[in-house]
Image (tube, rainbow, N blue to C red; front, side):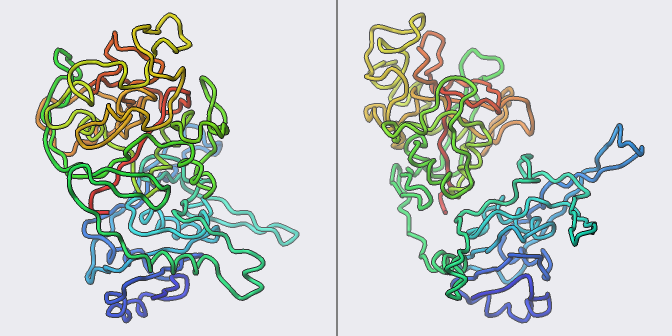
Length: 446
């Protein structure tokens, strides 16, 4: 079923609810300004959702010195009936202001496929001013941030399926964006097998994911004041079997969502080296990694999820057990270029990064690889001391100045515990260096 949200009004939308509820697939066209209220999102959700962060300037002086902002947001409540069919939203650069508030909720809560091109990136009370020559200037009266606090202006909402209309398509009377959206809603979701270590392949990038059942473990490091052991219970999820490789990341770059990591704040990138297409992508910031996972219809793992995958219910010290074995991972061995750190007792076969999945004997209890060495991995959390009490699905501190990386890298050796599965390391989120990569997770039901 097709609904043009730039033309249909609330009364017509309400009248069509029976057909929308029964539809196996719905395409909502938001390539422009919506005429229907944002409350229609209520038919796609089971719990309340929030709008993006709106910061309204409070101008106290003509020169705008000492400018302060007032925070504003609002909730959308669930509505009956719930639309159970597959959903796709069409959008492009014509989607501005209120349309971007609409789409930001769809993007953040992953309520549907987003097909087309990025939105205008101008949310926040768009104003216009006409000048001679039939030109019009547009500006925004608010500072709008995405739900995760990242920049919206000039970035916009990114499609999960990037499609541009072409001159040839227009000449033929075709709309390639609608055609691709039809394909998306016709695709039947695959029935995933929910058993320990079972695998599925993610459509966006071809990544193999392993199933991690719900459970509980002891998270933390014995003897540490800030990182002391505590019980953590987690719901089930799926996690990438390996670190995201250059050939995975290239799909996101080609889709127009990700930045090609061709420069590093420290070290040399490998993205453009065809011989390292299967090596972990490096020289990516936390925001780059987060954007990729969102594009792939996932997210970065929480610190607790990452450690559970690496250690398991028995809280092992390493993914393979409690004894270190330098043949099971890529660390600073005899090949390592950093002579003052190399450990000559081991030869892992690589001086720098290794192809993802190169050490099958290091597989963790649930089937994940590369959980120790090769590259550090970004996780979702801000860095901060662990809580004292038992936690359920913890997401870390609400704010901070540094994110967390886990797992150690080819640069590290084990004298200081960098390669232990319980080790955590604070890291500048804007850093894009040759030691850090990432992997993604997806909720088990998706």
